[in-house]
Each structure stands twice: as structure tokens, then as C-alpha cells.
Image 1 (cartoon, rainbow, N blue to C red):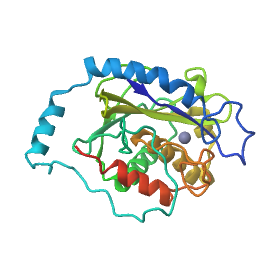
Image 2: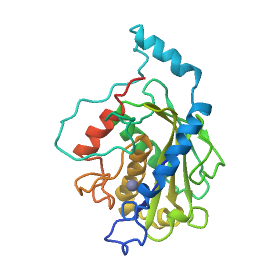
Image 3: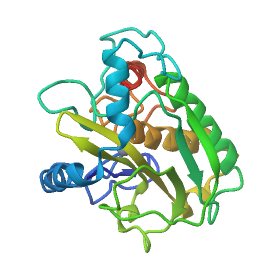
Image 4: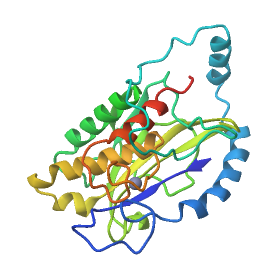
Length: 264
Ligand SMILES: [Zn+2]
């Protein structure tokens, strides 16, 4: 399986730069991790991945029935911003994504969550859903604490939880959150089947009313990773590692629309 969790740092104006390297400040060895994980993914893909309805839908599509799509990605301006995908299908520029023909179930672990977590989650899912055409469905609460990279690759709800660096070392230092998804499938037909967003409990607990937009931006940014966006080196986009914006930018929106437009 391919587990892509991005530790994301807080805005540079508030904290010192992170010592790690993967994200809104802390972008951690993305490149170093992936090759090994890809091998695992391909191996697992043959065993785990072929859910029956995958081939069923292929047959339906060949027969001209591709109308099970649950939503339509919005039409957006092309080429006016910057975006990147976490992964693309082998030999193509088609992004690895969730299928647009199934709802993406989401569970929340409220333990340690800020008081307004419902609003943060609902707003993030609404924005990301609108930008992709993907349909998110909240299916309740959980006591699941999330898994380190390499959790079992199978279809299960996307988890949103708040945690400390003791639980998730990637949250150490200036990192505000981690987001990513797990893909299964055969080479060339990988599909995200689950994902997780782990947010820094203490950071969110420290936010006051004036930080509401920033808190929301962190959640939205992590959901961008979950559906398949990678970081870009462009402060005009929400997927910039240091997240200067508070809403999806033009390139984010172009990438999100493409992620919601893949075949079922
Ligand atoms: Zn990030």
C-alpha cells in the first residue's frame, strides 16, 4: 500500500521553522519513503486490492454506463495556479484518487478535539467536496487513534483525529497536522481507499477566536492531501507548505477538480 502522510507545520510567522522537512513547514522525507512503500503497495495490490466492484465498474464503463458518478467537479480556470498530485498512475499524468462513484466515509475521533471540531470538519469536507465533486459522508465517531505509516490497506473510513507528538512523532516541533491516503490496486489502476488527518491537539487547543480561519486552513490543507494534492512551492496556494492562504487557491482548485474527475 502507499501511505502518504504529510506532516504539516504551522505558519512561519508564529513559530520557528521546523527542523524536519515535509510541509507547511515540515516536509519530511517524502521522496525517501515512497520508493520502498511503492514496492509494498504493488505487492499488496495484487493480494488486497481487487475489490469485486472494481472490475464490475470497468465492465459497466466499457458498456457505456459511467453514470454512477456522485457529483461533478466544478469547471475552473486552467493554468492560472500551481498544483501537484501526491501520485499519478504509472505511465500517465492521471492522478491517483478516490473513486468519484462511492461516498468517502469519514469518522472523527473527538478525544482531544477542539470544542468546534464539528464545524471544522464539516466546513473542510464541504469545501473539499465542492472543489472536487467528491461526496463525503460523516459516519459517526470512533475511538480509533490512527495508524503510523503502513497501516492495513483496505477500504475503511477516512479518520480525522487530534493527537500529540508522543503519539505521532511527525507532529513534533512546528508541525500542525499530517494528512494522507492509502492506495491499493494494480499498477496503472491505483485507487485511494482510506486516509487520515491527524492534527496537533495542543496547537488547536491554543487557538482563540481570531485563529479560526487559520485552524480551518490547516484542516482544509490536510484534506487536500487526503484527496491527493501534494505541496507546491507557491504561497498563492493553500497547498504551499507554509500555508499562507486560508482557502484553496486557483491551482489547488484546478488540481482538486482533476482529482474529482477521474474514471470511476
Ligand atoms: Zn501539507
